[in-house]
Length: 300
Ligand code: NAD
Image (cartoon, rainbow, N blue to C red; front, top):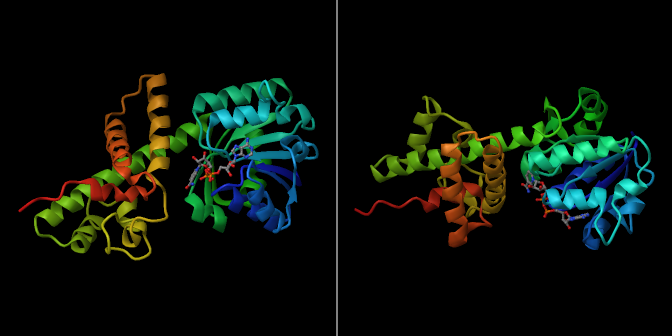
């Protein structure tokens, strides 16, 4: 498993591919944007002119693309162009790290297995900073034998590797986590606003909750109220971090998964409404902790 074909060199993929190069893998890269390919070629990757060229010598394919339809089109092709499966070596392992619908991941797995390939869905948590630093968390769905086989490759890009279950389980686990994150961020913002509106300092309130039953990850590492913590998006005009638009994408996937088997997700659904409204009000490009700003200021 020395030769990797990497597709999708955007915010996440560029850092991940660079870390594979750093770990000594031969990496052939392809992206629709030529300048992104050049960025990785400058770091030692082999640039491919077509998706098919990138895959032909690969033991492993890694994709980091916007959505399920892009992954399916890349792997299996369209009316206009063949997919990379047609040019891949027998027994190539496909790893999709994009965040996509669990049903898409299951369908992709089925099609690949039928053609003699193996597959794991391996969406990530940790954001652009984690992709660059090689500290991502991978949440993997697939057969145990495949997970064991790909673990060294994932370890070159991340710190924590979890096996959630069969194909698709990585996607389900990832959106469960992000749905909870949205609920926690909205709830934490609400509690802080209530405290501020009633004369309690946000830093004091945060410390109280951190040592009480309201303690949670957003308070510990990502406080949504400006100037309570240093080096977090709320203290930097809500720039950087994890965009509201991406949170809305993940909440949409969570709601679709819930609808497919009639799971009750009332808190997730409310969080989705809040985040959709926040995006409609022009905040889609801000960090998701900016939901704090959307809560009505008490008028005295
Ligand atoms: P991005 O838009 O920055 O990058 C996507 C890249 O894919 C682009 O460079 C685009 O040109 C390329 N691309 C599209 N179709 C292609 C194709 N057929 N062949 C080759 N390249 C193609 O997106 P991103 O922020 O890097 O996110 C990628 C995935 O990771 C998404 O599924 C996203 O939900 C997930 N994710 C993102 C973050 C984050 O913080 N950005 C965190 C966790 C997970």
